[in-house]
Length: 115
Image 1 (cartoon, rainbow, N blue to C red):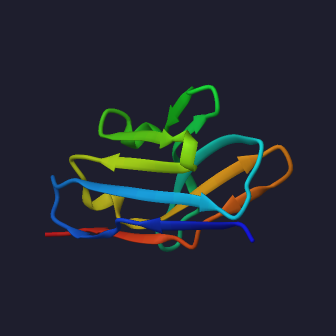
Image 2 (cartoon, helix red, strand yellow):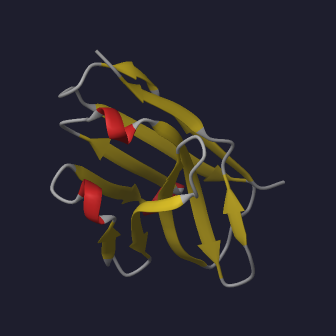
């Protein structure tokens, strides 16, 4: 059974850093891309950062220069390094894996940025 397990969320002050981790397990094959999305209360789920199997990356405009996505392809890990966090980064962050057959989502991890 496919599982995406996220970790690393929490409560931090503005300007702090967090690193989110997500491991895909259970026999996922033909991964085309991995990424992170976020959803704040009352808002749609938006792309934060994504990386293709060829290493191409894409970032949401609001996080460019502050967030960095990386992977450990051998073990199906995807990470999101978040620096200089702002209150507007507060949201539930979801890991997503896209394959040639379907997409998988994690359960989400809460990130709260507040003084």
